[in-house]
View 1 (cartoon, one colour):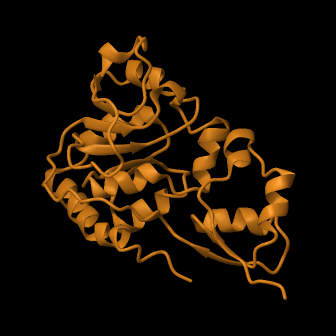
View 2 (cartoon, rainbow, N blue to C red):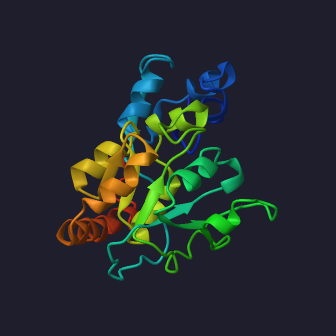
Length: 236
């Protein structure tokens, strides 16, 4: 008797690293009857590549188990970035091109990274220890350019829901995301922050945000936290 198979996708390595779904992953995923994907954009991606007849559901963004930060944030040009600095090719150019931003960085970074004196490096933290994240904004960006999210890692943002998106939400940080990313629609619809086409826009965009605008972003972030904490978006 054939079993009915359902899977929830965490990552698609071939798409992230090579830019296209591998034959092996296509074959494996085509065995499933239902697939829980990250976003509607990811659903469209697979509908164009996997066998017909698969039923899809999407998360919108990943649930996250942690104690949320409900402290009121203050509007400033402090931008938080959580990620692997050594693998974030765009980051060195971002630092040099945006000297008026106060960058606060968390994550893996080699000890000989020459950029460390250009930003405030806070080290590595456990994923559930988010209460100490500093800053006024959480940046979601990837790839090898500051002008757009380019390369396979950058293009991957067009279909995925990055875990750092959920991390920033639970940390109470309004978001800065790429305008062509899958998460941009959610940010704009829920008014959770700002979307940009390039990193060079960030300083001017922040300057244009009023105190009332920022307070509204923060309030909307707090309203959105329970969705991630309860896993309300994980459903069939």
